Image 1 (cartoon, rainbow, N blue to C red):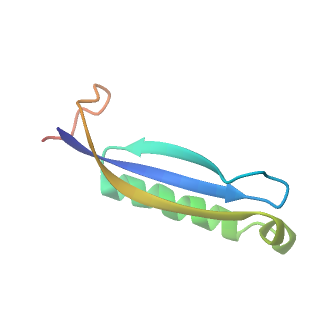
Image 2: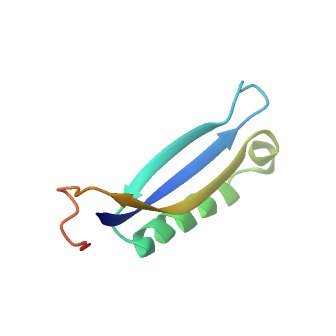
Length: 76
């Protein structure tokens, strides 16, 4: 098994019937955290009106995975 990192971003607006999410997979915790910070900084740069009507949050989660061929630099 391999350790990978999953960044899950959550979005919600008053018009949405539920919370939407997007998940991205990363080879390392550092890559996941860099992307998490970038995502949150992008949200913070949005207008106050946008932030009043759109809530967003994100988390990096450790995940045990089978081998993923495009991830060549991770070991078990």
